[in-house]
Length: 382
Image (cartoon, rainbow, N blue to C red; front, side, top):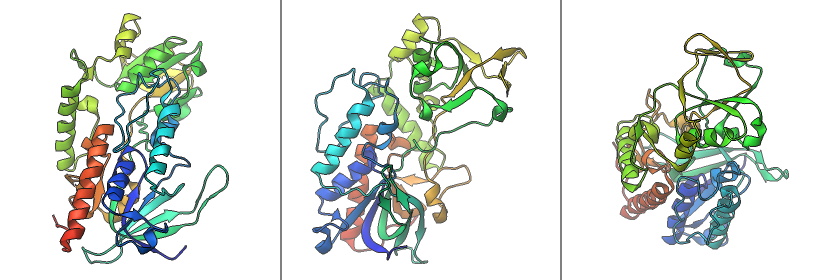
């Protein structure tokens, strides 16, 4: 392992939230660690990203997710998106935009770098945090050795894409057909002529149900009867969703899904699925067998594939050494700061998980960090 590098701020993740934080650090005089400018800087930062290339989770999305169907993408700070064709796949549009942003503001993102642990250097509550990375290599074989960064502050912006949630169901390991999560989805054509069970009640579940149902027989299943809200998912609805999630993280509960707060709003693909008669919810199956599922009424349904559109969890395993996750799995948040370890800020988590929320949280976190450093006093304890 290389000699530890000392830095003021480590940003973990280079999606919307991480890039927002990096932009605001850069704007306020922080410079990237290891650059010529950073060699003489009084305040430095480094952005660590586990992906091989710019684009955050967007580089992994399915091609049918076009700019007209994504659930809102807000501009990165200081650099509006270029004029976009609504029919363009988001995977072709957003990663180049992120790459251009990184280059324009010279953010010097280090990748691929997998953070394996964040821990305290010692017992001093105002001391340094150690950010430990694993040795890594990209698809070309290039990469970086394991390293340690000694940071005054950590901004965690790791999102959820790398933590797809697979619910435990009896017999799941026995299924001879294909099981996949939304994170693995590529194209409806893979299921042409098959019978596919789509599990889940979120936006992605409905979108993919509508898409797959055009080439395959689909069966939509959820644990609970969806509560449909007649209003569109407009700005007011988004504000209410954020308020609900904000209260949960303030209490240290897992953020939960937007659907759990707002109910099911009618989206264009939900209306399209309803118009074609495929938006027919069935109760969750009892168990999975080798060639199908046993339904709630005890009958057997042969199935070729099961798509688990069951959401994601926050990617926070690397924060485990800090002991700030509560028994229920959440982290108490005060603004962007972890209430039980104020040297850590979480952005793109809970109420700031949307693209506009991530932008605002990046700015808020940097302002709080700057205030701590300018005051030259220990950060507040909770």
